[in-house]
Image (cartoon, rainbow, N blue to C red; front, side):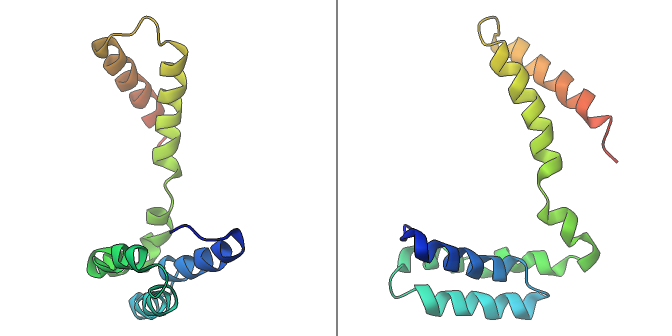
Length: 115
């Protein structure tokens, strides 16, 4: 959905209203608002978002105390950042097998700090 930069902030706020809603009913209402607001001009993007509405909103079936952890991807990203950092530095001497072994060892070492 390519928009002028002035309108991107409004679209971003409308998307945030969906995934940061207080509950499923609020999320469905926000999704309906997004659909009504953008479907005339950005039909393909809105269709892509709304075609799997039930799958997108299944998040709200999980107890609310878990929402913060589900919304946060940093634990996953931090593990792969470590692996990516090390593999980029050692590009010349890696075969697929040694790269796989090194990534496994890095992820194993990083997982020791997980709760």
